[in-house]
Length: 290
Length: 262
Image 1 (spheres, chains in turn orange, cyan):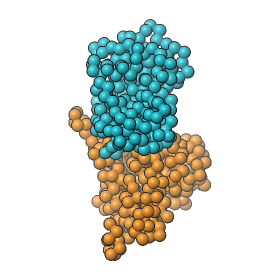
Image 2 (image 1 turned 180 degrees about the horizontal axis):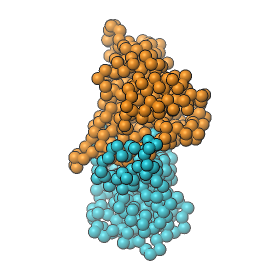
Image 3 (image 1 turned 60 degrees about the vertical axis):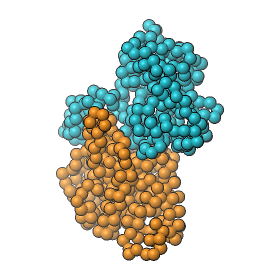
Image 4 (image 1 turned 30 degrees about the vertical axis):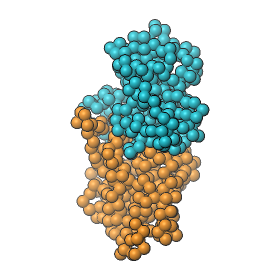
């Protein structure tokens, strides 16, 4: 089985519990040490081949999250991944320490790459190392595709104890209003997601799968089982749905069905067997199935 | 929250607007003022639309073609089909004693359904041209003004329970004139069901999702939603707007209602 998750920040399990329950794990919107109001609106803009968002990590902060949100999320009965984000290595350590002894938290995803907020001064591997020292929970590092060598980052975070990778976050983009030639978003640029991100995500997953052994959650522009199967072929063990959830809340069940059908039509018993086949030399069967 | 593929029954041109009539399928029409996300063919994201009219077999949406998504919706033809999700959000509170419906322009969209639910109460409408005012035919008996006259000129001294939908300047004027009015607001939305956090407005000093808390808000009690249009002209001070995360930052370093950062 190839688990299907949501991309962090693309689903609120408390306003759409039935959607969350259709996932193999629910990933929360990123939680920061202190509450954040987020960025001013307009925060979203549709583009020709994707969308931009500039939400700015709006969240209640770790205290209110643990006190008020986590118990309600736990009652959904879906494995919980908590996405955390901060502005320093100390922030990541604090967040992981807070979550470390909470049984309802299955995995901590480290949002190392939000394009809409200031970056921490430390490198990704320094942030992961700080998180690693603070918790024994599985840690997934969510990386930005906007880097010259993502495989190098992947090796560095794996080296300091990341248990997996979430690939990829959105990439910074800008859209201007056609009439006024001014930015459509209040803070000008935002994170670009949707179909345009898919080949970029595919390249990142492909490169990282060659560089590290740890599992990869592939995400970026998945709309169908066919899109998902390609990320699996590039090396993902699980996939996450983001922008597609906005137009189709039934996407998890639909993509799961399509993924199974894709696998069977190619002669595999399950989609999991397709993992990393893109790295093998082409077989006549794989070539003719396209 | 339910999503279905609904067939297009037909479209009617009403002045510059299009009344898109869809099969109702198994969808609940919801409370007047609630909304649906309509798949816009060829576009990535669906578009939020409040229900205009409903019969046993149909859901009808009044749409103004102002961009690629609404143009795609207005171009649908009988025999086409689109996915529709809803009903969503919070609609009008219909437990009112003396309802008065107030709408401006395409803000008339939810009013025929509201009117039906309330037994055809009095209504006042404002439009920017005689052609746009043809939409008043959807609300027989309504009083109508055309710019430069404004709909607020028709407000009686004692307006009763105002239920309103229209452009932001109209809603802001009503907010000042009629505290407690129920106002249906609009914001860009990606999902319509709480996932994207794209549609926030400022309510009681905090950003809240209009798709969850609204789109109908009580003017006097819940504060003032922000104006996405006004914000386009707002100064951009990225670092200031993001400073709220640091304990060293003053608490008032949040983006303010008028789009400036103090």
